[in-house]
Length: 340
Image 1 (tube, rainbow, N blue to C red):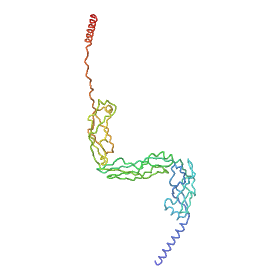
Image 2 (image 1 turned 90 degrees about the horizontal axis):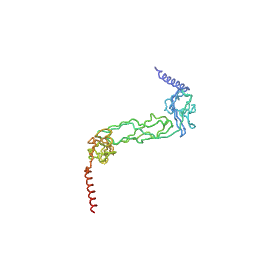
Image 3 (image 1 turned 45 degrees about the vertical axis):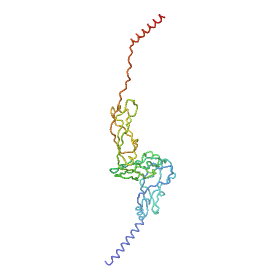
Image 4 (image 1 turned 90 degrees about the vertical axis):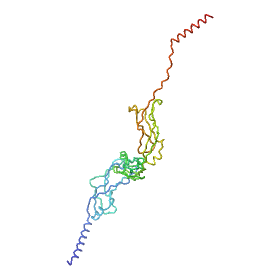
């Protein structure tokens, strides 16, 4: 037991010597590294879907390889220089020149596994505008209402990439969002969802602002609103009964405070009575402001037809009496001429 300290020290030195010998030995391992394309001309873009990472075999001392595997992702990478790329399929043979590991000068590239060469499709780069689709729901607290329809800002973004890839993109959705019990105006910053976007397509924005306007819920009633009968018809014969209505509107307090009677229109198309074979119809309601709901009283209106006015008849003249009077006048004229 009195030599236990010496034994521990000997073990430590032995382990250190073993570790030094092992770590200094040159060995090979497979690692995954990111694939980075550089110096592509601005007028061109990558149209295919090359792998974002590839598996390569590297050599180096054990200690360097251990450090490399535990380092950050970009500690080692494969660079592909596309400065002289042309339209069409580019076939690239990977070599030691493509391998970059600045902090590990003694680690060397040996080969790329499972691929003989890297193939990349090159297309013309274009830029186009696509709409932003809001995926979400916004609900107000009881007693409140949302004014208008929440829309993203910007409602369109620019995307840049290969022509063939961009022609298949029709919209950019936002991430799914649900907001409830809103009682004040708020602006939400919602990330755009690029999960289905082709690789090497660059968007101009990544966040959409969505302003939501909330007001206390209120009700207001408007009376004697005229109901208009529109279309081609004889206005001297047809009319609606009753001719006016009361409209009760529900909506935001601020919106209803600005709504006037003139901002409400009630319309019924004359031809609807014949098309729907009905003697009473509900009117079409047009309100100039954004309201939540409305109710028209009465609900239906009847088409009333006036009785045609018949002009008074003219008394008939007795044709036989006219003939008798004409004969008498003729005889009288003859007697007068004889007397002369």
